[in-house]
Amino acid sequence: MSHNKLETENLWDGLHEECGVFGMYDFDGGDVASTIYYGLFALQHRGQESCGIAVSETDGPKGKVTTHKDMGLVNEVFTQENLESLSGDIGVGHVRYSTAGASTRENAQPLVLNYIKGTLALAHNGNLINANELRKDLERTGAIFQTTIDSEVIAYHIARERLNSRTVQEAVLRACKKIKGAYSLVVMSPRKLIGARDPFGFKPLCIGKRDNAYIIASESCALDTIGAEFVRDVMPGEVVTISPEGGIQSDTSLCLKKKDQARCIFEYIYFARPDSHVDGVSVYASRIKAGRFLAIDSPVEADLVVGVPESGNAAALGYALESGIPYGTAFVKNGYVGRTFIKPKQKSRESSVRVKLNV
Image (cartoon, rainbow, N blue to C red; front, side):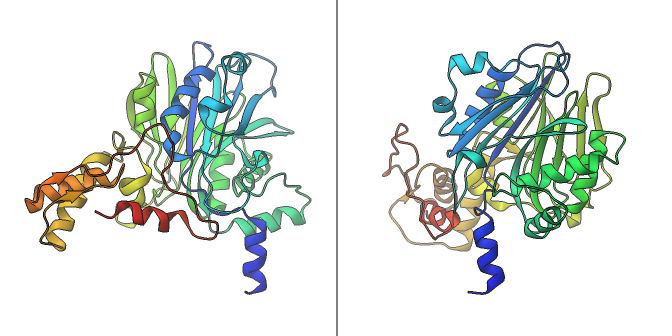
């Protein structure tokens, strides 16, 4: 193994691109923690190792952020008591799944930074390809890291760019110009909620509204759970800023032409919940269509088509509809036992998932 490869593997705790992010800003001043809790509950499929919520009061002391995060599922980490202690009208939440390496409380998100301009809370879904390089540059200038996740690199760059920027959204934009890879971000400043999506659009992010509150979430299913209306998807490369003064403000200077954009196909195949819509496409309908295309591309003689729960069911149904082979339900998953595969120690999660998706 090369020295560089060994160094990278020791530094980072592996990919964690399947995380879920959720942010909310209630312009009427109502507490948002309980709603963020239910939003994270709806996004639990995107991460089961750790979760957290950070909130702040926009009319309270500047720089005060209340946080609770720990290892475990949303309903295990949060109780009525600690939710009531999270008082604030603006907040961000996160559920996390890492595919390898350290799974520790220190790596749980949201990350909260206290710096000369105030506070910054960040929740990140995705992974960067230049995180190691950016981290080394920061360390050479005195940065001290508390985690092994690339999300902290993003948070540091936003904080540093804020020193030379007129606004926090400008700092986020400048940081996004430096980072490369797949990411969806929700950033909380003392008075603004900001969402950002990578220029290719690998990771989903959408905007919702409930009464006089705005939400930024990984998937539309989280909006349905809290009774919010879907406003629109965040465009690939877009940085959106939500505040009472400006409503939803948009910066599209990093957006690519549609022909240059890309998508993570696994969002449609596996990561996203089937009742979500990602970039205007129904996840469930896309799985049905994938099954139909598979039947056209790879026809077989068989007595029965069976899906392996949960994400394989819709694809199996599509295959059955296109091929005319009867659809069966030979596998029934127990919905109370959590995940039905064991995460390999040295293998990627994708290799495990491919076995599950066989139709």
